[in-house]
Image 1 (cartoon, helix red, strand yellow):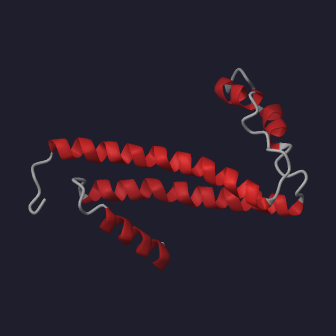
Image 2 (cartoon, rainbow, N blue to C red; image 1 turned 90 degrees about the horizontal axis):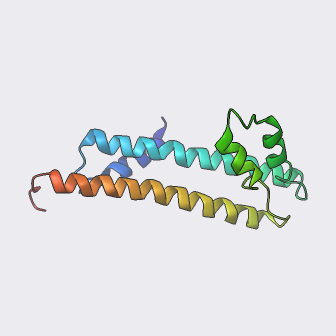
Length: 134
């Protein structure tokens, strides 16, 4: 963990100070968020590299390749998603469109995560004694 991650963690802890979460819970929230953000960044970079290498074919074969590797009996839910076209690339556009699609998906996933954190905070607030000054 380098200085950038330490600063991020410190800011995250500061942002959660006024919640009823204890220090361990605050760290758990941030450590759950960190791989989500890093994973999305890595995924985005990989996809953008693929787009730069082959703008017309970027992502076109992903769904088909994934489908050919799946045993639908072993991975039935994933096979249904592949068959439904969830992993098929949008029609060729530009890198900005690719980034926009990735951003929309990430915002949805991040919102789900943060909604869950908000629900935990709300439940904790209902169980915690009043905090001084609050």
